[in-house]
Image (cartoon, rainbow, N blue to C red; front, side, top):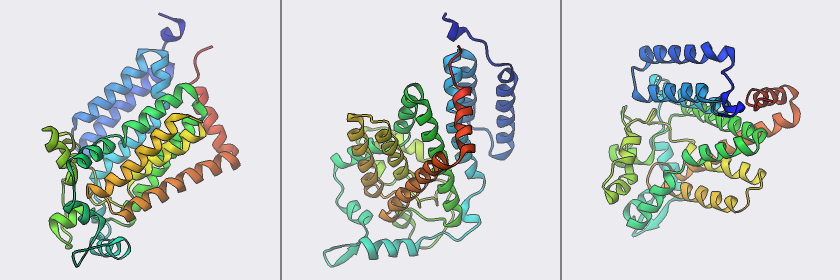
Length: 313
C-alpha cells in the first residue's frame, strides 16, 4: 500500500466522524423515524473516511453534498403546505394563459398537450434524461475533484446554495405540480406520497419500478416551483464551460435541454417551474461568482477546503 493510501485518519476525524454519524442517526430516529438510506449514508461516509487517504479527501470534499441530502430529507418533517397556502389553480391558469396550446377548440397547458400526444420513444427518452438529474452532477463533481479542486468547491457550493434558495422558495410559495391537477383537480388536499406521473410509462415500458421507488420517497410533493431538476443541469453546463470540458460541453447541453423538456412532457413541472429553476440556478451561480471575485473571506473558505482535501506531502 502506498504512503498516500496508508496515511492514518486525522486525529479529530477518528472520533468526530463517528460521533456526527451517531448524532445524525439518533436525531433522525426521533425526527423522521428510521430509514434504510440513513444507514447507507452513514456507512458510506465512515467507510470513505477510514478506508484510505484518497477516499478520506474525497468524502471530506463531498460533505457539501451530504449536507444537501440531509437538508432535503428533513424537509419531510416540515411540510411546506402547513405554513402557506399551496398554489394550485393560479399557477395552472397562468401557465395556460402564457404557454397554452390551442387545439381542437381547446386551450391546453403543454403538460396536457403531451399527455394526449405522448409517444413510447419519447417516454423512454425522457425517462433516461430524468435519470440523469442527480448522477450527472455527482459524476461531474467527482471529475472536478480530481482534476480541478478549486472549481470543484465553487461548483459544490453553488449546488448547495441553489438548493437552499430553492428550498426557501418552496416554503414561501408552495406549488402543486401539473400531475396533481390532472389527478386531483384544482382544490388543495394534502398528500403524503408523490406520483410518477408520465414517468410511469417508462416503468411500464421496461417492466420495472425505478421511478415508482423514487417518487414514493419524495420529501416534498408541493415543491414544483422552482424545478431543481431544471436547475442542476444548468449548473453543470456552466462549470463544464468554465472547465473547458470539450465535447462534454455539448453532451451536458443536450442533457440539460432533455431534462427541461422531460420535466414538462412527464407532467412533473410547468414551463413556469422550469423557468424558475433556471433563474434560481443563474442566481446561485451569480452569487458564488460575486463572492469569488469580491470576498476575501469566501476565498479563504475555499482555501480551507482545498487544504483539508490536499494529498499528504
